[in-house]
Length: 195
Ligand code: ATP
Ligand code: MG
Image (cartoon, rainbow, N blue to C red; front, side, top):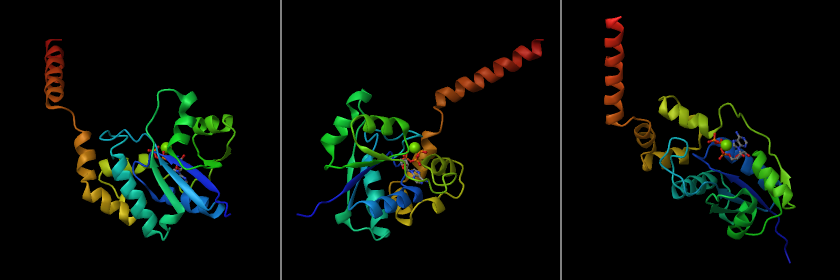
């Protein structure tokens, strides 16, 4: 019988970036198969979580293929949040293939899996000042070069789902809020003139 060692990595992947790819490659040097849990799977269309779980599955599948990682070496599983931290490990276990080892930089995730008896490793961070989801989203909004931070296939997916215009649209204020803001400005100006 062949014993497959499996490791689990969980991230929101909003979006997938080159740091994620590096850490997945590192994990695959230690275990035969990696389970990639797409966290907060229920979230999308917000500035912090702009992409749907399905879009993130596409990004990962295409980026792993682009990097020559064969589909027999990974499982991609969307994982919704649960309200209670104390039952989260059981929730993850219910959705994933069996695994022995969890890789995470998140202290809460580390703690919950340690308490459940798993082997927990904090993987090294690669160029974290650039390779972070927060930085990619900031650059998209600021019309700076975000493309160099993500694999080419992720650029294609973001283009296909019109992710740049989605993020910019979500950052706008409602017209009613803008009118109120202008009215407030005019009102303050009047008050100052009266003084
Ligand atoms: P955000 O800024 O939106 O939180 P993120 O870059 O932290 O995005 P996540 O999806 O939250 O991405 O990351 C999940 C996991 O991926 C982290 O706990 C960490 O283990 C790993 N990771 C993220 N960025 C890097 C990186 N630059 N190098 C290595 N691992 C990384
Ligand atoms: Mg993070």
